[in-house]
Length: 112
Length: 114
Image (cartoon, rainbow over all chains, first blue to last red):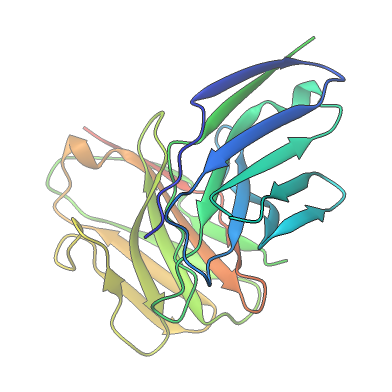
């Protein structure tokens, strides 16, 4: 299983762009990279998923270099409501389904 | 997206007793997953439940302690047996949406064992 490493915590201010980088040196050829967001007392929520290059949706962008050994989640113009824990995951489909193994996550605190 | 509900939302239980947590999904899904999240920690996968077959447990989790049922494509239960204070945690179920690998999580069940 590919293990992920990301910063334990980050601080930002409203209106700034936040970039959270995750390393996954042992990622397998068939693995996708997925990011989840979790607010206190709630289950994680899917943010974005990608395989390579760049993916963008209405919430975030995901940048994946050619070697796929890392990825960067970019949150444009964060607000206080973006304060949450962000998890980077690499899926393992060896069992025929996507088994998510959560790492420690990054606690993002957005300040006024 | 999938709408997932869990019952109970929280409970306080005595040591040595068992609690069954229910997970209901508003659409048919193949795979359902059960996670545990201890206070301030990340999520740990307990087991994967496929309808019509025995659940697959992760290392450190056994069926005698966490029996799982998956009677149909929209429902699953997780039982926490012979509880101890170390079992105090949030238990979450999730389902996988095929073709996207996206998982949807329930709101969780907060369990406190005294």
